[in-house]
Length: 143
Image (cartoon, rainbow, N blue to C red; front, side, top):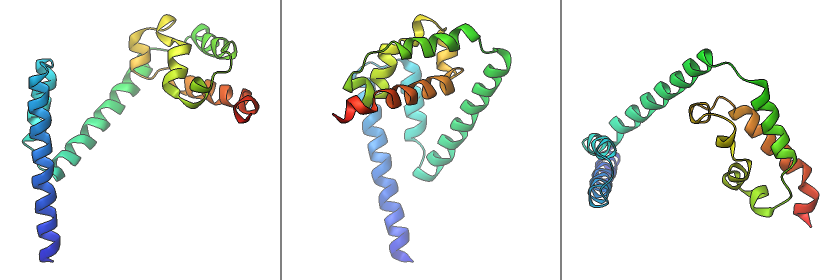
């Protein structure tokens, strides 16, 4: 039992040390005050407190997304654009293997609002379009 407690304490000390180092780096790089304040808050927590805090923040974010979706109905023309643009993307191994490259080439911010994108309003359709892109080009990728 003593080993478990000592291990927990040492992990906690190491985690706090990493958080303080991260805070110092953020300050050194002149990050915005909000980012530094958040890291200051985190660096004062122990690992268990942080895990609870992170879960609470994740739950709050999910609730925000649900509220946003309730107040902002989907637009058929945007859904159609997601699939049309995906269908017109040529095969590229980077696009095939990387969701980031897929999004860069799809360029959803050119046809939907930042709020819609940030709040994942069309995320299900984008994920599905990416799956379809990968299925369509599977043979080319394996060559």
